[in-house]
Amino acid sequence: MRSIERWSTRDSLRTATNRTPDYRQTQQIREERTLSGDELLTDADLFTGDPLRPDLDRVCPPTVVATLTRSQREERVERLIEQAHQIINTAWDLAEGRMRAAWCVLYSGGNDSTVLTHLVRDRVDCAVHANTTIGIEETRQFVRNTCAAWGLDLIERTAPTTYRDLVLERGFPGPAMHFKMYQRLKERALDQVRSDLILDSRRQRVLFIAGRRRSESKRRATIPLYEKDGSAIWASPLAMWTKLDMNTYRLMAGDVPINPVSEKLHMSGECLCGSFAKPGELEEIRFWYPETAEAIDQLQAEVVAAGHGEPFCRWGHGQGAPPARATGRLCTSCDDAQFDLFNQAAEDGLSA
Image (cartoon, rainbow, N blue to C red; front, top):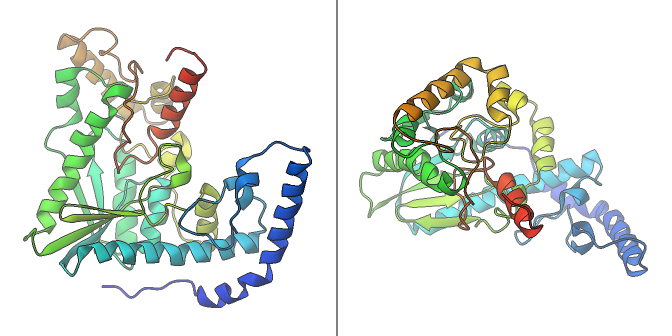
């Protein structure tokens, strides 16, 4: 395994107390203003922790992180890096002495998973990418190129049932069918990886490291730091990070690439199942990636020919309420924000 090269965190940890009183003084002023009725309570007002000493109980509100100076944000990220490695180590304790089949980082090609892969690239045995058969090829190539540049082995797997097979049978999915798409396109691909890596399920364990963050949405707020699933162990070392922390890491590292697809579409594009597609999303894809849009157009024609009517003959129709259950472990952003908006609309008495 490659040697681990990290920023030195211990020296900075010893100097953290030098700036802590400044933050606490600011917090005290905020609390006094709140008690006097000068402003409404916000997440920042209710936060009683120290952003320079992130814990594992509650994510520091992004608005609090944004008040830190650049040097303070970098100090915070150094601590988060140490925390992330501690989460991975604790997760592996769940193996209870079983042999290490492999440690795998799950790499979609999105910005968060690229940061995660950069962070753990010297600790894992390989990266894993699920080819959903309905993603933008440029993202898949970005994953391949990045892993090659970092000298990281890549396992790319495609689920037994393709997206085309699924929509010809059932029509295009809406929010209610998202979890089924996740199971068929991502979970089963990962099951293949597990089967390939584990030769003896009683004696071996595989560790899957995912990039889920609790601050991404209300649905993600309670994701576990680690959990066991049969012969697999899951770890979420970025659970306590905010988006600003991710960006600060990039600035500190200096060599974390950005997927061009993410820059243009503001999503990784590795899965375009359409369950939570936004209005106008297909036309935005068409503008930047016409070949992908044309492939979806062709699928729509085939779905119509297969006998599916409205709305299921249209990609991204958006019909149907999402299930209450949590989304899949590998879907970190495609549905959560839209799910929260759906719930807000329901609370406001609006139709979905």
